[in-house]
Length: 282
Ligand code: ADP
Ligand code: MG
Image (cartoon, rainbow, N blue to C red):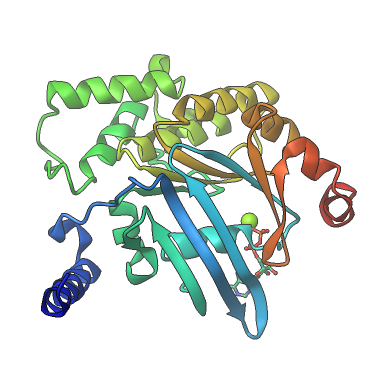
């Protein structure tokens, strides 16, 4: 490429990045997953009053991968999700969605619009609305759909809600008021609401905390069915759940003091002396 072409290209890219920063949905900014990477975190550091909640944390999640993250309380797991979703800006480091989207340049709402869904620990569904209406609202809140809250659902949208109801095991509860659901069902509904926006990457922070054993098992089945279509990052303490999700062959990441302490099969990290000392041996 000639130097002037390169300069023109760089100028275009800068202008495009500036527009993307203002409003990614307006630019049609699309993440590119051609290189097989869904999320690329490199060397992020976050300090709170001099205390490093994250300390040069690096992590790569492949397209369609289901990755479990474990580690003691205070290891920085939630802070890591805060950095990916734009809630907290790290002091330094890089966070990319796909190979082309600099997530650190985006606001929290933009990160969610571009295809990163996040599930917080506490379920936040609309308690007064029924299950179906919660999903309908989530669908219409998607700016790409541009449906008004009062417009009728298209056949396609109805089908999608039906699909999600089946996935989250709430088909028979569609007309039930969300406030009357069990804790586990509320968690599923919230996951369903995230799915209505078809996120490429799903971040799930302690999704089975407070669930019964049966609900936990069904949640693992749900996540396994999403794997491949979506990339999932699951933070969890429940080792039985992690074991079910990793199926004896997937990598888990152990965080400790804001960095990756170990990475490997669950059986490998469970046998790792450092991991036993700081986490599993408690
Ligand atoms: P985890 O989710 O792994 O339990 P967190 O990411 O919540 O850990 O917290 C990591 C560390 O950062 C903890 O020591 C926590 O007290 C601290 N921390 C998190 N958020 C803040 C904040 N907003 N202000 C000060 N300290 C914080
Ligand atoms: Mg946490």
